[in-house]
Length: 90
Image (cartoon, rainbow, N blue to C red; front, side, top):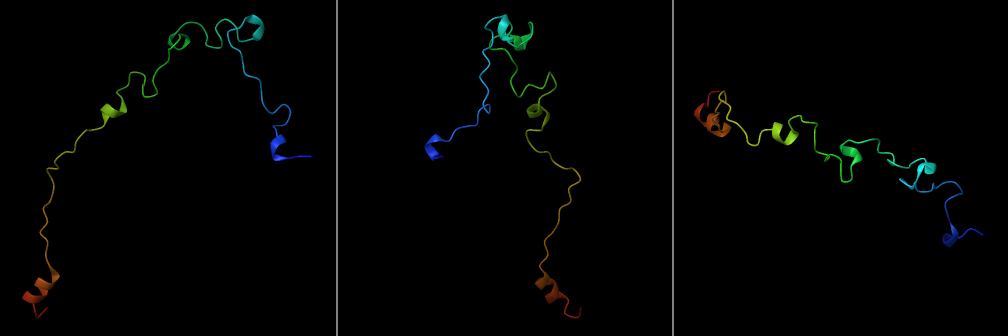
């Protein structure tokens, strides 16, 4: 009888973990799927997620502060009630 305490994954649903670097017979021996040499083959090797391959990084491409627009127009606020009071005739 099926109960909550004996529910399990069906047979063949979960694969065994690959044991890398454990001899040529394993299929993942010697280099362990890392290829030969290079930064990513070394222990502790690899590049940080923010590295962009030598391109100027995003955090240095974007401006850190604003700028002053030399074409900015200054507006004067006008109250419509004051306009109505000055021009009664319309």
